[in-house]
Length: 163
Image 1 (cartoon, rainbow, N blue to C red):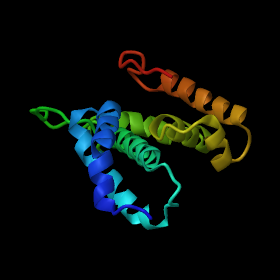
Image 2: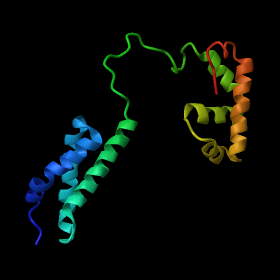
Image 3: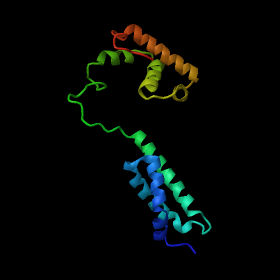
Image 4: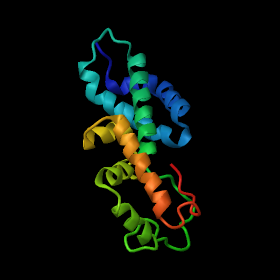
């Protein structure tokens, strides 16, 4: 007969907390520990009686730690203070209208390839899937578009434009 879940928490709680702290550090470990036992509590009734409960809990804790790491990559990093002055970088109508005009004059495939590659961070294969054609053709379109911008956009070299 399985022991009550409360006894599982008492028996393995310290072990799970050590795993969480080792994988995440002190700040995120408590939350991961709580999430581990919440998940385990939901699944505990279906756990076979012959299961290694400690290993099962450690596996859940490891997966919760992975979730925390993934969420941290998606969130913006915390900063101590916000910048004093706002920037118009990337804001329509800002000082970079000449650049956007130069981009708008590019042929469609070059403009789209540059947009997907350098603004959306997509791979050439992903761009090819959207635009049609091959990854090499998408790479060529992006390179040709950048070369055109470097030739026609005033100050492209001075502002440090790079591929």
